[in-house]
Length: 105
Image (tube, rainbow, N blue to C red; front, side, top):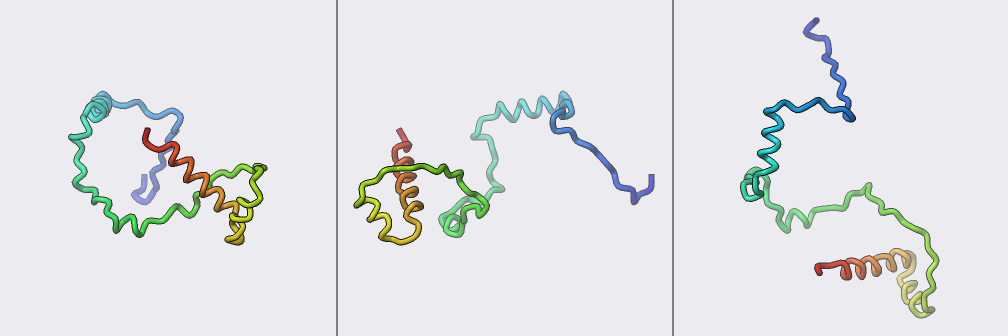
């Protein structure tokens, strides 16, 4: 084999290689260790400054379902006062109510 020849290795994710006894013992020890023993020293703390610059994943798009809903005329008029996007506004209101309802019990 020439030093410039690439090394080819195929990995079948559906049939992973068996762990050695040492690897199994190491994983068992890690699983049994309490969280208090985990060293987070190399992870910087997440501060308010970090979250001030955070952005939602631009590729995330929640799955939408098309529905028909009957609203009082005055409620619909109020939603439409902001112009375009009244359905998005309605969804945000309903999501906020859902999250408050599902909050800590």
